[in-house]
Image 1 (tube, rainbow, N blue to C red):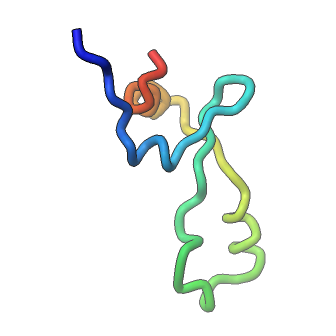
Image 2 (spheres, rainbow, N blue to C red; image 1 turned 30 degrees about the vertical axis):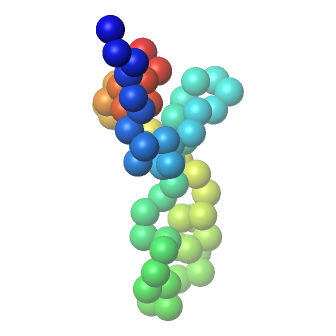
Length: 65
């Protein structure tokens, strides 16, 4: 049986935490930042976690199952 390949776009975008959750970056932080408030940009800097609904598909992309 051939080896399973991870999706390279997924390994660039997601990371595992120590407890097994999957971290992700927030969207809307890359450009056109002049019209966004300081508070909005500050909150977008922090990492979020993947929603429980999307967890199965992301783990399949990363070959964690």
